[in-house]
Length: 320
Image (cartoon, rainbow, N blue to C red; front, side, top):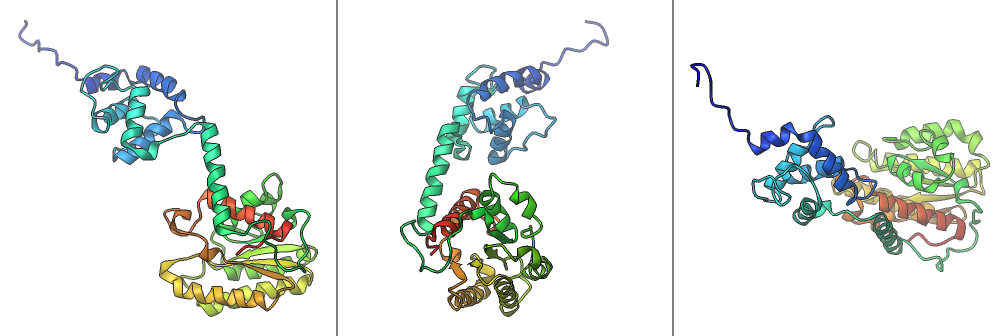
């Protein structure tokens, strides 16, 4: 060995996996694509696995192999060797099953299974938070031939329900930001509706769901006063219209204020039975119906609410 020659440093498995990551990623893409539904890409699966495991997830430009290696080593506890039962940086059936076993949140379903699970949960939710088609409200409120002839007025909670309520038509795009919008307050809605009254004169029905964005900085008196103005404005604009007044949802921090507002909404509705019905969604939802922010409803709940409103407006089913 010459004077300036050095002994070559042996390559670690982790370094080898990093160097050959592109080839290993092709194997992962191929194998995982057969194991997960089309809606979840291999990259998304590995990214989610890393997040749940407390490992920094891959960035869009990162190779997946080094992250699969970390998951195999730290989560799957595979031996430090480059075999199909060890740390090889490729996510195939064995690694997939082990990750599912160790991280239950990763459990995925086939398209058919996920579709059926969603339908089952929606049916159960509708049963839990609303009435059945056999339960009807007193005669007097006309049934709509088309539920989409109703106008939904509100904030981001309404917006998510409206996506399902107006599904299959162009009305969501037309009404979005006009009648419902993220972060919209009850005061802003009232002012905008005042300008839009001529266009609303012939509309047969409305749903009004406002106040969530106001409870943190407005009094119960002010919020209900604005809601009352909206109800009266719509009825005066079209005395034959029907309005579904939806309660504010639970919020521990502002619950006392919310209870006052909901009681007043209910009382106003009871005083106007020829035009209004009250949807007491407040008492029907639970913590499991909310996203982590405790404000917005999960997709399945918004879908169920849209379904209940459709049935109520076209069949006069009760809303609870």
